[in-house]
Image 1 (cartoon, rainbow, N blue to C red):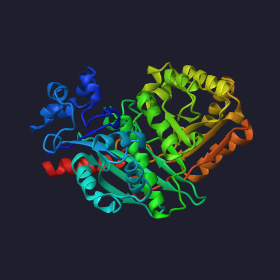
Image 2 (cartoon, helix red, strand yellow; image 1 turned 90 degrees about the horizontal axis):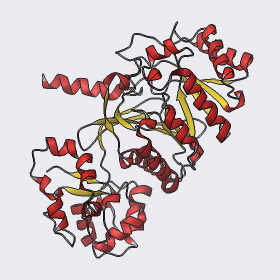
Image 3 (tube, one colour; image 1 turned 30 degrees about the horizontal axis):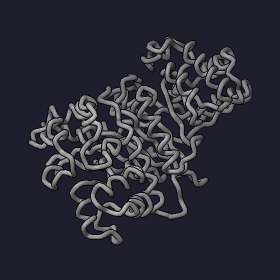
Length: 426
């Protein structure tokens, strides 16, 4: 049996039927599930027929909804209450269900011991505790956890959980399956773009980590989220921002503890300026000259080059007064010399970006099989950071590579698993 996970936003007040289909929005769900419908070999597609849905005025029987599941990881309490009412259940059960999942880490409905048996059976038939299937999980000696999730259509995405000695616990989250930016040193960029992640697929990655952290120690909390996993977050703007608002409202993660990274999608950097939620901006820069940056990051040309990007960053700092971050992967003998450090410092000053509103994270390159560059040594890293700090007054922090003993780099675990799976087919 093939299971389709429908967003909580699809459900009406009176039934399990996706209400927006009745409101003549069939094309939306048809596009969202087109790849599933094209490849499915089951007969379950009939349940998504607009004709069948329009003819129904009550919750469908058990057999007819066997392949439609509402995702309880991503539904909010108010909508769950509405759904429970439609099943003839008491709305207060919503609080119990959400607590079992978010607070206690329940992975089975049978664990929900304060629910009546009848409701447990309804949930088994019509709901799921998440839509993301863990395809592989790796644990580093430094505490980093790397997960590879398989999505409903077979796509693979990665999420990383990173605990720090100072008590911070950070989740690194994917926004797309693959990436269209083509950064040559990035494993995800090397594999190309498959599709956008939905708002629920983004949110669920965070919700599951938040639950895991609490379950391990009730005093701990997921403190930070960085949108630095697979994909370009600002190329999936609506779904990323929708998920971020839910992280803030439903999971209690502070807006300024959430960072959106971009290779430089200039129009949406400018759009981010006017967002009411005050998330942080990080720009993956890596080069201080256009030709070099375009060679490493082909999207540089697409969005107008460094001049346009730095102008957008200037506007961001000028209007928001929020500190932003430049990410810089140090590649031995390439972009890690004292001369390059001074070019970077001058680039920031030339575009009138206040040095007190800029922070630079430098981190040695995480090697990938598709790129021949190697990580910079400690002396080069320290000198690069020293020049920016002492000569330009720009805060610069050398970062440690996390999960170096596992496939923690963006796209590395997916590449490893795909290689194994492909080899098994030969």
